[in-house]
Length: 249
Image (cartoon, rainbow, N blue to C red):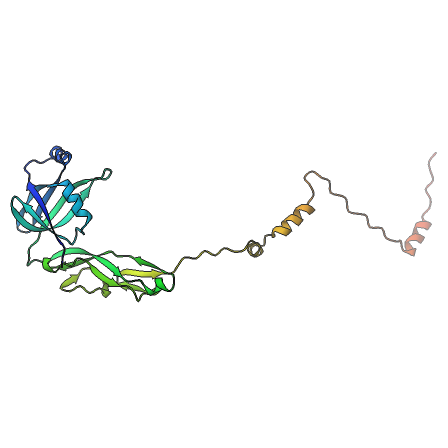
């Protein structure tokens, strides 16, 4: 069954931005009530009471019995406007509902249990969809929809098609994923020597040896030694046969 709460409001006749600001400074929040078969009516509600109420309910699926000038009507909160910078509610919309009229509401999805992939495999439960849209009579609005996730292992998922909501029509694609269990993230760190070997870079010992062997900047490298070999007999004879050069006087 839907959660039902009570709230009081009063009609207001003033309108405009200035009147709305003055109302908020006085602790009241501008509001409006509308619905099929009725004209919209401007209201004012106590800001403190409204704030406390919104902290403990799911506005999309909670029936608010709104009392206006002594008359009580059943409503749903259709929109809550909040200030973009400062805390506080700027405006709230109430929609009047009727017992025999189906309405579209969004109901929270609650995952029940600890998945097998979390408990035994170290995975993480990822809930992708947290609210499901349904068409339902006001009397059949569920407070929430429970989804058993205990059998989920890593890589497995549950979808909209796995939900069962009595007396309601689900208005979402049945193939959409609601929850899945993902594998734990692991970071592989290669050993310095192994990483260097893979990339072809020298390891620490080789770097030190190379640095010791390298000449200092600006130093002159020694010339390579001249190879001295013994002359062959034929070369010696040819050398003896050469005529001596006479010196010029």
